[in-house]
Image 1 (spheres, rainbow, N blue to C red):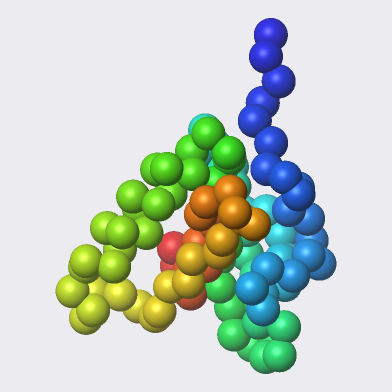
Image 2 (image 1 turned 90 degrees about the vertical axis):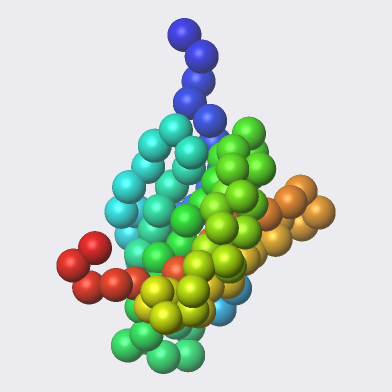
Length: 100
């Protein structure tokens, strides 16, 4: 039995990522993990941070590229990529949409 993939460093509540503080794990699957987060300077501002496992970073980069090409009217808020220290795209920060 192989061990499940990991994200290094491992996301955890309270960790800061690109100005956002991770609150709780919302979901995880074959591609990575999705965390709820709040702005470090404005806790009322909410986001989700989508982390990629090392072997799925290329798919996350394709997702980022596809999101950039959507008509701007379809995007609820700006998106931010988070680089992984020379290891490629590590995460996407997306504004949280209520009910999703």
